Image (cartoon, rainbow, N blue to C red):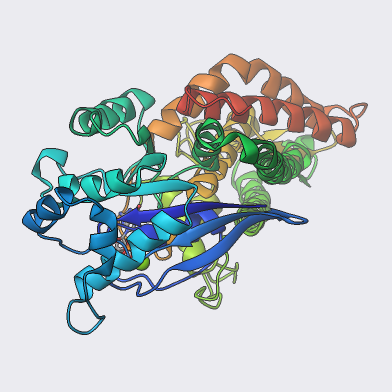
Amino acid sequence: MQINFSLISHTNVGKTTLARTLLRQEVGDVLDREHVTHQCESYTMFEIQEDRLVLWDTPGFGFIQSQFVEELHTTESPIENFLTKTATAKTESTLWSSQLAVKNIRETADIVLYLVDAKSDPEWLPYLPVEMKILGWINKPTVILLNQTGTPRASEDDTVEREKWYEPLKNYSFIKTILSLDAFTRCWVQEGELFNTIGPLLPLEQQTTYDRLKSAWKEENFQVFRSSIKELARHLTESIYDSTTVSDESLFEKVGLVPGERQKELKHAHREMSERLAQRVIETTNNLIHLHQLEGQSAKKTQSLTQNNLRVPEHVNESIWIAFGGAATGAATGLIADILAGGLSFFGGALLGAIGGGTGTYLLAKSYNLIQGNNNAVRWTRNHFLEQVQLAMLSYLAVAHYGRGRGEWKDSESSQHWKNTIQQILSQYQGQFEQLWEHGDDEYASKQQTATKLNDLLKLCTTLTLQKLYPEVVIF
Ligand SMILES: Nc1nc2c(ncn2[C@@H]2O[C@H](COP(=O)(O)OP(=O)(O)O)[C@@H](O)[C@H]2O)c(=O)[nH]1
Ligand SMILES: [Mg+2]
């Protein structure tokens, strides 16, 4: 059995872009102008044996005179008359494109996904009532998708935005619901909501098949989620156990080299550990990007980032790095340079205290965010580790929201809403993260067990974060 979703909208609203995001593939042509897609294309979203979920990208509606539609409306078979009105791609391209799209909806679609640009005012869209009238002639279950919603925001603000569209659309009985799904900044969790919404809208005979396909989609996406958490847990476990040996403290004191020599040694240890951390952050982020199928042919070759030749994430990846910092300039370079300099203060933690604040070795080490543990080894401080946990969760959110259709980064968007949400959740579990950090200086604590516990804790906190960001979605 084949179940067909058809994307339709006024031209240039973003159908092909959303198709790319939903398919995690670079399909079709995207340009900021009208009538870029000239024919209906089908793409398999998911298949199990004979059963397929197919997404159709259509050319969409061009401008159609409202008077023309009103006149057709009074005829016996408006849709037939609309489709048989002679038009060719050359003479009347807008009508031609609209006919192709409408034909697809009429003949093939089981579910219609009608996109609107959330930034526009529905009361001032002359084409909206015209297109709704035509879709009304076909009368298939339709979900309105708000795209171009921009910066991820609180769910209350999202509700307000959707309400703006309820009033002008409330009289069209074929419209079943309105969801936000920005092709650039949506999260897979929101796609899950779309899948949940569609089920009951399908005819009874399709529902068993659909449920099977939906469960498989869900399982695949949860697998990506679990693997991402595993990557982050592995990286953070390394941060707990990473250490650099320095010389015996008392020796320095004996020869009177405190604090100058000591400072040099700590600086060196700090440099080594910062480089390892930066390398891990880059590797982990690239692994998340890979898991989310965000690498594309358009990706640039890697380029050198610092004099240490840390590899920069690719073209599309650069955009994800910007999402970490929001307004931060310099993207990956900024973040990695920050880590290399020993600072990591995305969350405003009191990191990298001024050097020279004290003369004792402990204070010196602290100013490098390092703490002296057993066996003359220094390791990351508790606060620095907590900051790393926050950064790990932020990097997950940035990647999990990054739509494949986004391609190159366009605006710099603030992720303050994500940061606040992460901080709220983590404040409840800080003690448990601190306990795990203690393992790094406990010779009896098994690294494997720490990794497992950290994995579970991160999974819990990230799930709670996603639930807080999308309280209406029943997916977990
Ligand atoms: N900011 C933003 N721009 C989008 C989004 N979706 C599409 N666009 C842009 O809108 C333009 C038209 O997109 P396209 O997918 O070709 O529209 P289509 O004609 O409906 O297929 C392109 O410049 C896209 O980059 C979105 O979710 N957010
Ligand atoms: Mg298109």
